[in-house]
Image 1 (cartoon, rainbow, N blue to C red):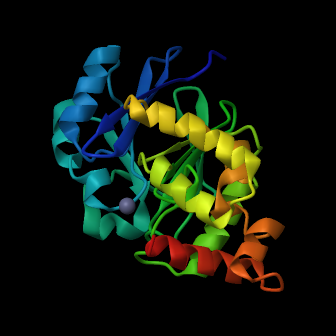
Image 2: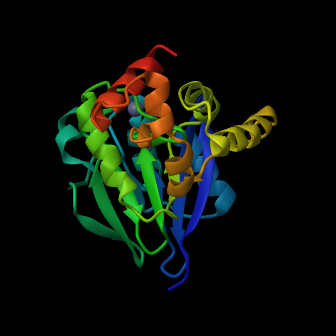
Amino acid sequence: MAAIQFHQFPYMSDNYGVLLHDAETATTACIDCGDADAVIAALESTGWKLDHILITHHHADHTGGLDALKLATGATVIGPGNSASQLGGIDKTVTDGETFKIGNHQVNVLHTPGHTLDMLNYYLPEAGVVFTGDTLFAMGCGRLFEGDAETMFNSLAKLRQLPAETVIYCSHEYTETNGSFAEGVDPANVELKTRMKNVRSLRATDQPTIPTTLSEELATNPFLRANDGGIRQHLGMESASDLEVFTELRKRRDNH
Ligand SMILES: [Zn+2]
């Protein structure tokens, strides 16, 4: 089976969209649609024809262009069932544990609530790629708009069970801000310092820091490192539970 291809493109101030293309079956999908014109421009630049739109969650910067893109391309929309009433336009609702195919490639649906309650992530096991929406960011995680800290903690636990080499596409370029927060709570982390050097030089020339990998996140993302001795010592929470440490980190990040 030929490898599936990915094409990432920026839109709005700090969002990323991605096109997925299976050349064998000439099947193309996109992740979210905050801006129909941006997706259409990406389709024109690749020469691919859109078949499916995969929605992660109901926020407008992920769905605002849905009607226009559907009308322009005739693509079918796959997304969360529990936001269908607010969203409209979803042709096929999917839930946690379900699978479907893009061309010949299997997609596993992961429900990862916390940022919103409807949040879905899409994992392609053969390619080793996951689309984490606004759940897991490079060195960060989504703000808790609809879920609580425990909900997000459990969702991140689901993602950290994926193979360490999994490539992660998230929906926003928040890496530099996230990383500067991470440096504050995890000051002795050498891998984090090295990563931030690279991130700052990429951002200085407006280059993307996404995709990332789960192994990089396990080493540098404080929201996946609540069990880390250095972070716990820094917070004065040596004997707290991982969830308590995570909750404190999320609270501090909100005020960063
Ligand atoms: Zn969002």
